[in-house]
Length: 506
Image (cartoon, rainbow, N blue to C red; front, side, top):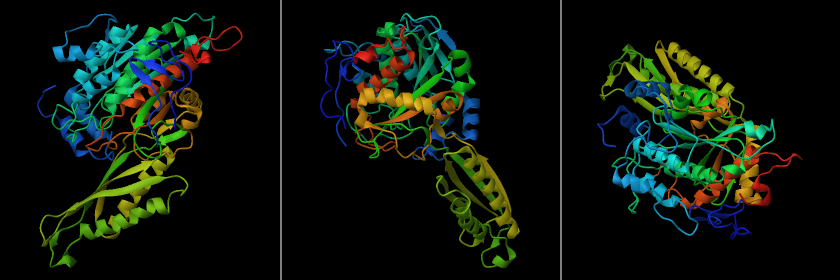
């Protein structure tokens, strides 16, 4: 835990490496330990609102992409808008509160986003606000419509560098997700959601705000680094794999050339106390696959079971048998989860049905474990059914892959976090989570690191009383700024970084 303020004073408007002021928010120690018809996106997300079990499954993604179609990406001029904003949104995009530090009051921006949540692939207002903010900061380039409603702002450093300096050639990306959940918010404060059944219950309003704040800060100090930063605002993390959609739209080969990519998630759980930062090399979050097993038997009268092939009895045997896929087929030192979450069969008390359906999820941290469990599940389903003269149809949907941090980038994240949060407040041995995250698609393509920032929120993620902890905005922005100093600052003749980070001030 960070106790008290960091030593050293930052100049007005500056954000020091150890502390300071960001856009009117003082970087203090965190506390201790649009109207449209109902869409397929809304219907499918409501079904998965309280769990990540079906996140990113292929069939949902393909259906939604067919519904919305693919929009062409567009490069916008950095300094002027393409359309007028409505009055309420224009007020949010303008600096709503100018305080002692000067600049945007980011807490107000975050609360504005919270009041106007939008589902995945419907983030029209959110992306418009992001674009207007990026334009006001003076980005070198802004691209829109990537993967649906995704936005990328690009900022090039102007620091002088020697010929061939790798920092000057390097490009890094900071990613934020923008979508909300199809949930009804239970909070009753002033910035509660104004859209029934829509709620920023996972903190993506805060993630978007933090990357915007980092963009503003770095745009004002582009002479402190020589490389290029891409600010990536991603749609549809919650259910449709927006990261993959952006990649398929050329995010990493056409719109950016990221050599490294970084992301964070607010983490209101005891393993990462408020004021702490957690990162690890290797897997930090699991894959999330969904399966459906359709057992075809032969129904009949419940009083004459001998004349039937009972799919319910066979299904019960299969539920028990599948428990051995993990307990007897997997290395106990490598976590894997196989959970049956639904068992549907029949509709009358005196009829043995023709079919039964089992559904569930598989989670794993390693791709070989993931593939082996899938093969064992399919083989066992067929074998158990065949032994009882039934048949099995197994539909296995691969969702988000494991989120795996690169060793080098996890180390850079550690260094940047220690400068922002304090050495004692950076956790390197945290247990990975069996939840899933579509940032994994980006990490499959580019070296990078995903991290958790401890938060003091009233509820946990996906709970109806959740609200983002605004106190983590300045320190997390400081983490992003430190990454730029570490990775993009030009080198002096002696090989030392010319970044102001060496002097504990940005």
